[in-house]
Image (cartoon, rainbow, N blue to C red; front, side, top):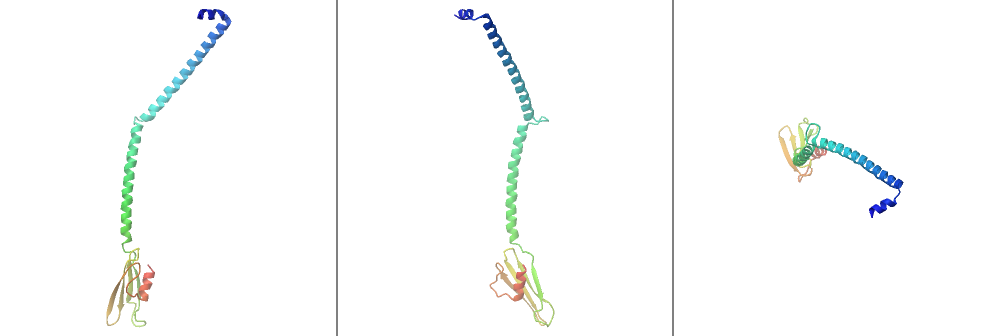
Length: 164
């Protein structure tokens, strides 16, 4: 049957068909060679990337970097917690004390009396006053909570608290 079909085709048509098939085969071979070359080049580049410039495996390097980042994140979190703790502790420490020297008895004597406020950031602490006179000297301490006291504060004590 095949021979009868081939006999019916003219020799010119058969020659053209064979040439077309041969041309398609050559083009396919060229495409295969180009694809193979490109694939080989990509493989070389991939292996160079994975292996690294100096023989260091980039995959291992990336894994190590990831582990280092996880470790550093943990350390940063620990440091943050320590700083938070220090911040809370510092807020409870005494801020810069404020002092006000004055003459308690007007024109008699010198500025030997004083009021001093010692508080933390929240205004908790104490105000200490010393009243100096010729015959005696008295010291008073009044506790403070948010710069307020259950005891009556003098004008000098109020002034020293206002400066804090």
